[in-house]
Image (cartoon, rainbow, N blue to C red; front, side, top):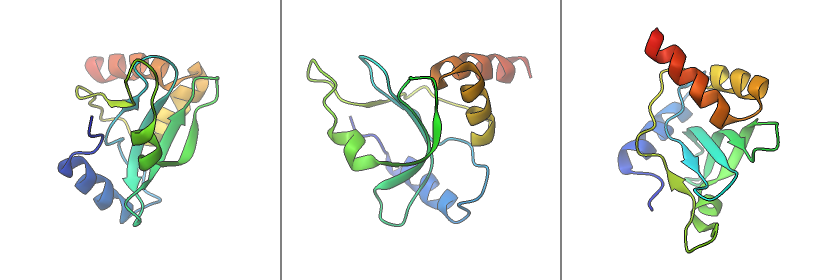
Amino acid sequence: MILLTPELRAQLVANAADPQGDHVPVAKFFNPLGPGVWLPTFLHDDGQTLFGIGDLEIGCPEYGAFSLAELQSLDVGLGLGIERDILFETTAPISVWLDIANEVGSIRAAETLIARFEREG
């Protein structure tokens, strides 16, 4: 699977103009067979370094840099790799995601709560 469409890449590059901004995550990448979720907010000038939240589901999601090339090259088993959640949508900024994910222990758990808040307004 191609993790970044041209539209997603363009949004990540646009967000990079304000690297201190509290951007909304642009995409959600995940391991379909186990732990691992990443929410990128912007893309570094090198075209490969993403910034956002990474969560290996050991109870401490972190904001920082992660490699697009590394995510694309991972073999998670059964011939599968890291995937992009094509249905992912959010209006919550990355700070909200990070706060809730740290409070509940993972991005996956935070997603349930944030989706409920976004539906209920």
